[in-house]
Length: 391
Image (cartoon, rainbow, N blue to C red; front, side, top):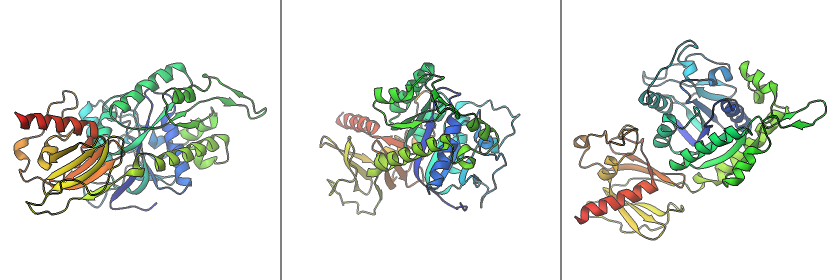
């Protein structure tokens, strides 16, 4: 996989587990290699800045090579994958005692300061829990969805539900559930033993009506391969564990191809006369459960036609001032950090893209593009603006 000077990612996929110790990073590495073996261009961001493990998992903890300018670097490459981790930037003995804002900034650097090139899937290996990293990612990038990793243990399943609910609150789709450490299969007799419970992940998927991606058996070889920096999919591709990862990879590809991005749209802002106005969209360009169409109304207005037939119009500057990203909004208090006096009164939009079926990504004329505008938030903004204008 050669170096690229630009970044173009088709699918951002978060791999998450609310509880630590379920083998999430192991699943991420092997699943990524399985997709690569199927011809996809795959990369990994190790977003667990406090406990990075992807460098060891992939057998490469070297520093990244500098890019063409001082603000960017190239990702490391291993097993056909591109990746970056804090393990490539600090030593094993370096303590990382960071506040939430610093975690957010580092994730932003991994996203925007690394020349990823063209990727079909970029996995984000998430830290355990439901904290800053989840919020930062949901605000910063158009996630195609999240893959949830659990084990059959009841305690793990309870934490998994908590993690899934956190993503749902952020309007991030759940692409599916993976059950790791699902059971031990005896090599001699072929019989299996459910050491940590049985079918808990599959039952969870059924209960919450989530896609079931598959299960990975307990196999000491998976752990040994990971510790050696040579994931099982790369060195034992004919093993039962590798077959399980392969089936999961196939199921994930199917989910990605038939889920949110199947109805993706993108359009660039056009120059229009100041008296020109398009009152209604010519054709449906969105097609989600919430929205029928999104279109350019005028030189400085964006329109949304909702599923119920009602329509809302937003000024470009109005949208810029309402940006929900962590640069513009305090993550803890919700207070605005943006300086309104510095936002040009003639602010316009450069381009608009769908984020799955649940949000818009907007690039403004001042270059700002990190806000993800969830449709629910846009509905509330339309009501607030309407009430303000009626006073």
